[in-house]
Length: 337
Image 1 (cartoon, one colour):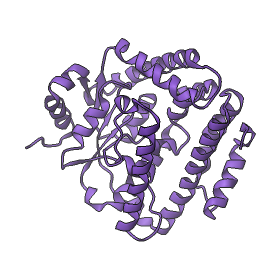
Image 2: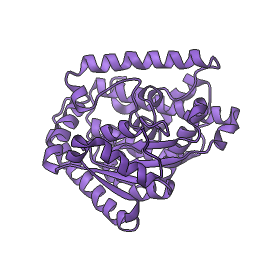
Image 3: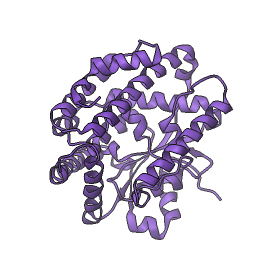
Image 4: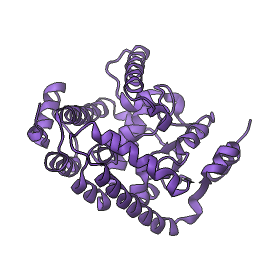
């Protein structure tokens, strides 16, 4: 596919149906964000052939996963009975130490998080159990090797390991309501839509994804999930409502120390999908985006101040265990040896 004309919900959904031989996408609340996203991609992003091909694959994959997820839950209704305990949801701008805190907290035997390999391949492919999981892990390892090899220096921005705990952004992306498309393409109207969109259905789907992961690995039952992705800043009130028992650690760092790195990364990611230079436009877009999200966060925080724990970047680097203990205490998790 060389041009973006095929980036329409109807076309992409038909490709997904053919690829899976399934036709039940579940509730249609995903159609509105998918429609806004694909229109912005066609009319504003100036996608080159690589960008069209890459995002056609991503969107079709998300739609195929939607079909397979609905089918899996139909065949295994016990999934809906999984009890998910979310101990903490880490909030913070990118480059504030949130990945370090996330991996530190999930090192506790009383906590759990999503591994990178299972955020990319969250659904069982067959009934072979351990063999199926091994195949998905091997595929994830190959993807990580390709990504690291193709992007020198990326690991300095975000350390990649198929078997490490990582953010659940690929799961959130399945709802077509996430910050990921905006970081890889210039999508001003989609970004405007995301500033005020109701993300409650997307978070309901995230909870179902966590149930699916826990159902596949029963040893997680009773452990506290630790969630983290900068996208959560765009839906703080929804996070507070959907995870009412969760502590909310928030990572902080001087804004001038992180925004330049973010602008550079977004410009690099966007540049691979278009032949236009959108670097300056993306910097303006993300300045406004994060500002709006932080203002909304402060309004939501005022009504739930007792749930927030502030973690400063330098404190996290110099005394990580003290930062972890603060979060464990707020989440009601013993911090023993």
